[in-house]
Structures are given as structure tokens and as C-alpha cells.
Image (cartoon, rainbow, N blue to C red; front, side, top):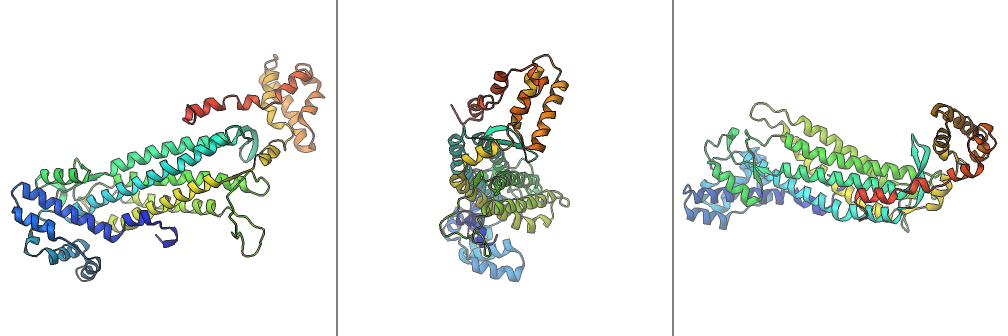
Length: 433
């Protein structure tokens, strides 16, 4: 991932230093397990634990020659350990090291994502939802005014979705937390299963029930899918903010800091640049998810067509999503809300938003629903064309007043019915006790 979108906490997890450190720990744990079983002299195990080190620069130099990263690593470690290095990597295949390490990195990256989501993003959305629980605005379908909602309900919907995404990501992290130390093609031919159990327990991983030469890539596809769906949710929310920030709407707006510039050409511009950036980044995560799906089908017990892909999509996707979560949390926290514009837009259609209420009231007065619909729509279309008041048209329509009095009609044009269950919805979502 380019530095522009890379934050240090996530970058550290995928660094060469971190990866080789995990490789070293796994190799040492395998030696410890073999030592406990009497397969390696105890003195050799102690010597390996004491002397085993690596140098990233040296590993990369060796890899240029041997064209194999694990062999380059083992060669470098042997330079520090000496003769006892012959006990390192006994019975193992490269994927024992690579896939167990990858599980640890995916787990750590997933935990960091969950921490940001649960400790910063969700609290920010919750706070703003409660703040605007009763802030009236127009609900829209197809981009057209529908019926009143509150801005708090919109945010409550986001909160509920993010809870689902948190649960899905937690499941994906758990599914990815499997190691394997079962050797070439996964038969334990040269290592006893007890070695795998020991190593995985020490690392806090579960043992794969069965593997061939690799952990099966449906696990990684599930993990990337969880990231992609979460990224898609963030894109959904930021797309909504972008619509609400349009000049003609201006019901919500990204925070615009002092000294910030919106356009190199037009000094007046205040653009939703963070929202647009996050929308674009979600496309990257979705694209990477597709690559993870294509990694599932490998030849026989394994090929390495997945390897080059994963070296990009796993670090990049977690780095992108972490950046997205950090930025989205700050976006929500500082989001500018304009209740007065919400109310202004709510009233733009001069009462048309109560059309369903009038239709239902007529239907309750013995008219069929079809008859009521026809009467209400006839008047509603005049409001669209003539820019007149909907209530006044209804009061002048004898077919309406034959069934509904002025007092009854005026009562239908009230907001209370649309907000009476807000607290109930908030309780169901978990925003109120």
C-alpha cells in the first residue's frame, strides 16, 4: 500500500521485520516440541533459543541468489546458530511456516480492525444517533421525497449494520486463526501431530483439522469477504453523506477545517473529499476479495499461484480498511448537521409527504383503497404541476370533504405519527436501555 494510505499500526503487522520474527518463533517452537519428544538434544534447543536471530537485509540478499525466501531465511538464521541449525526446520515444509505466520498476521490485523470499529467508529455513530434521535428530516426513496424520518434513525440504521459487520469480522478472524505444522502434503510423515499441537497452543492458534500442503484458501476468502462487506458498508454511508452535502440539499456536510482548500480553481468550494476517497477505497477491497475467491482453486495438494496474490491483497486490504475506519470515525464525529435545512427540505413539497396518511384515512371511511388512492393522487399531481398547497387542494375537493372534516384533515398533517416509535426502534437496535 502506498504511504499516503498507510497507518503505522497496521503497517507494522505486515513488515518484513514482523514476518521474519514470527517465522523465527515458529521454528524455535517446533524445535522445542521436538526436544520435549527427545528428537533433538536439549542443549541444542537451548542453543537455538539463545542464538537464533536474523537480519532482514541479509535475508533479502540471500533471496536474490537462492530465489526462495524461506531458504534465505533459514540460511541467515544458521549463520547465527551454527552447527545446531541442522535441527531447524526438520520435517517441515515452507507452507508450515508461511501459513501459520499468515494466520497470526491475519488475526492481529483483524483485531486491530475490530478495535477501531468497536472502540471508535461505533461509539461515534451511537453518539450522533442519540444526539439527533428526534431531528426531523425527509426520508427519500429513488432520491425522491417519501415520508418523514429522523436523522437519528438514519444513523441508528448505520449502527445496526456496523454491529453485524463487527460480528462477521470477528467470525472471520476466528476462522482464520488456524495453524498447520504437518509437513509436505499434510500427512505428518516426518513430524508427529503433537508438534503441531504444541506450536499452535503456544501461539494461541487452533490446529487445522486437516490440510494438504497449505491451509485451504476458503479461509482467506472468507476473511477478505468480511473486509469487503465492511468496506461496502462504509461506502454506503459515505455515499449518503455525499448526497446530503449537495448544495441543493445541504442537510449534512463534512467538517471543513480552517485553512482547508476545496478547489485549485474555485475558492468557494467545500467538497466531500473524505467521503469520495472512502468510496473509492472500498472498490479496492472488493477487487481484492475477488482475487481471494480465485485463490481457492489450486492444483492438487498445492501450487503457489495464490502466493503472489496474497502478498498484495492481505496487507493492502487490511491497511486500506484500517485507514477507512480511522477516517470514517473522525468523519462521523465531526460531521456538520443542519436541522434547519432538513426542516426546510421537509416542507418543500407543500404537504405531499402526508399523501399516504390521507389515503388511509379515506380508506377507513368506507372507500376502497383504489378509490382513495385515485382521489389523493389526483390532488397530489396538481401540487407537482402547480406548486400549490396540498392541504388546501384537499379541503377544496368535495370527494375528500365528503368523508373528512377540516379538523380531521389538519390532524393528518402532523409529524407525531412518524416519530412515535423512534424510541422503540432505538431500543431494538441497542441504542437505548
